[in-house]
Amino acid sequence: MQKYKMKSKWQYVITAFIISTILVLIMNYFWISPWNLKSVECWMKMFVILFIYTGMNFLFVYAGYESREIHKDERLMYGPFLIPIVLVPVFFICLITGAEIFNSKAYANIIQVEYVESGDAILSEKDAASIALMDTASARQLGDREIGAIENFSAFNVSDDYIQLNIREDAVKVAPLEYVGFFKWLSNKEGGVTGYVSVSPTTMTADYVELEKGMQYVPSAYFDKDLYRHLHSQFPTMMMGNIHFEVDEEGNAYYVTSVFDKTIGVFGGEVVIGAIVTDPVTGESNYYALADVPQWVDYVVPGDLICELYNVAYKNINGFWNGTSFGANTGCMQTTTIDTVSDDEEDDESHDAGTDYGYIAKDGDIYVYTGVTSMAADSSNLGFIMVNERTGEYKYFAVSSANEQSAMNAAEGEVQQYGYQASFPSLINVDNSLAYIGVLKDQSGLVKKYYMVNVEDYGKVVVADTREDCVKNYATKLGLAPDNNKPEDTEKTEVEFVISVIQYVDVNGTTYVYMGTEDGVIYKAVFHLNEKLLFAKPGDTIKGTVSGGLLTIE
Image 1 (spheres, one colour):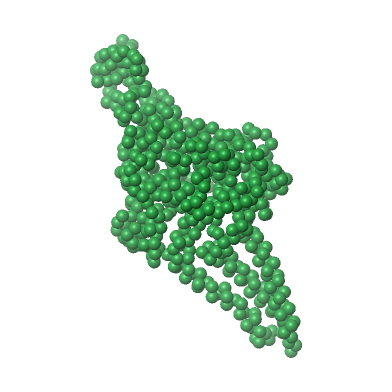
Image 2 (cartoon, rainbow, N blue to C red; image 1 turned 90 degrees about the horizontal axis):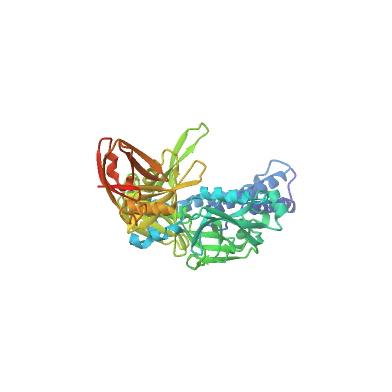
């Protein structure tokens, strides 16, 4: 039998190593992940790399034999496979170290929540004009319409990732342009991405903002201009995500990337520890710890993670087993969920409950707001949380209330004849009385009306065409402000009549009651100011006063 000399045998080993290295470098270029042992994706990549090296080594060494009598070199062929095989149980042990069942106390303390008075945290009705009520779907519609009216934009689309920002005390949603595809990038890469779309949720308008210099390092670019690949080369060990577009107070464009860390065990307790701010024109990046993030940056801690951390903390507030279905759930709370309706391939509706939240622009920052309920997930809230998206600071204020889903259903019920859908509301403080405020959209996603619902009693609902009218009518309905529907400088006339016919008519979101008499006189009353008219019927005698063409009953 002919046997290998050592020199010949190691030639195959070296060849296998060189080819494996080339394959690994190619894979690493396209599979972008952090070189951090706290990243599950890093472990997956390491397993693949080890199997590439061991597999290629096996194939080349085995191919070098001219006979099947290879038992003398089995260590060289099979030995390397022991490395990934041994690492598999190590990986699963690392998974277990971060499990909630072993770290319930650590999870319960993963966030710190400050308890505050509700009146100090929520915007008042005087600030109603600055409340951003538009959801992302409506912003997309306005943004696409704006870009569609501009010529020579075939190379770009508007990104679907609209971000809520506070720019010069004005709440806006912004989204950058993005390349349509590889060939559009190839033919337009020298000029870069030329601008972004800014949508005002307060005025329901969209504007295209053109930049002085095109953005080169963006998520929709390719190869080394791909922003995530560029960041990975600059910060290879950092766990990054939530890459999004922002604008500073001077109108300069940046991309902000959240940096994460695992704080419990090896893979558990993911939190945001900082942010990377990148100039997309030059590619220059700077890392900031969470406490040092520039004031103009609005969005560092994602809203979904905010809700997830709150839920896991208050699930484990009194131990792991207490928060399970087998426990008493004492003290356990969670953020509210909203039903979403979707159609499947057979046009059958399916209802899913998911996390949702609103935004509040206050003191130059953007806050995520959502209600908090018990783990029983009933239709009432125990309170609300407001979380600063830049600092991750939690504030909680206790107030028993109807949850957001109930408020949305109540608003939709007021305009059920139109089939409008309510968006997730925000909060407003009207004379120390909290209320939900939101918009009603038609089937195409366009905003049609505004609604307000009392937080403590979702039976008190007001719908109007404008935000200002909605706030005024709501205040009037609850007796918190004078009736703005009545002229102040007109005389009052006492009347008494017998109803011969009565009709209820909705005009611009306000319900009016029209009552006619046998002699042809018609009286008009605002229903929410005269709710006793609900029981009125032909033949009843009405007494009241008429002022400015409106009847007020006694």
